[in-house]
Length: 236
Image 1 (tube, rainbow, N blue to C red):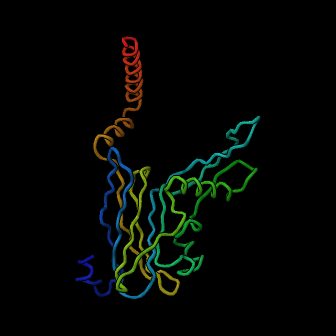
Image 2: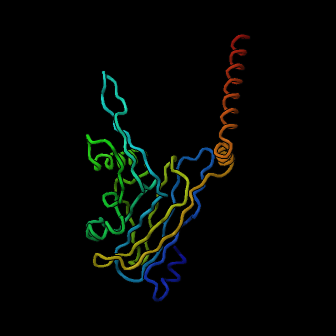
Image 3: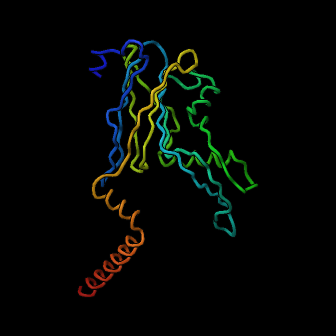
């Protein structure tokens, strides 16, 4: 922030932003972390920050009560769903731009473009979409509320992005928009890598590359642990 204060936005560049860390390292015992985004604008306007994880298809299952128990009755696949999604802004989104503009940029949960593939005729696509958003928010991966972008001295801005312990790995995109009069003036995208490091990463890679061998070793270890426990209890 001191550097930004000492050297303001370069002439002709309306928006400059960066991250405090471009790598979010997941190690053993990782309990979540925060990454600071900071920047400066050349002129007045509203700043909106969007953090998107990589998009993956999500399977959503609908349960129904049958003979007193809940069972999976039907399911749908929701395509193009980011594994993580959060928004922060200087003002409420509906005060910054019209719904059509937010739709175009997919800013805000209500404006995400999600394709639902289903054979279930008992409910609508919107029901599966709402279920996905609810489940992601419950897991802490989607921000149900818009975060706050703090502005200092009329030009500098900052916001903290929180990532839960269960954050998926991958390459995330941090998008920063400058709005004026309800339109995007300029935008900047910065990558953020979320990855496993250390022993946890090595075990994860081994499990994916050698799935059969990893499964066999897990079974052997489980049997050995059970046998050792039985021996210990028999001696006591």
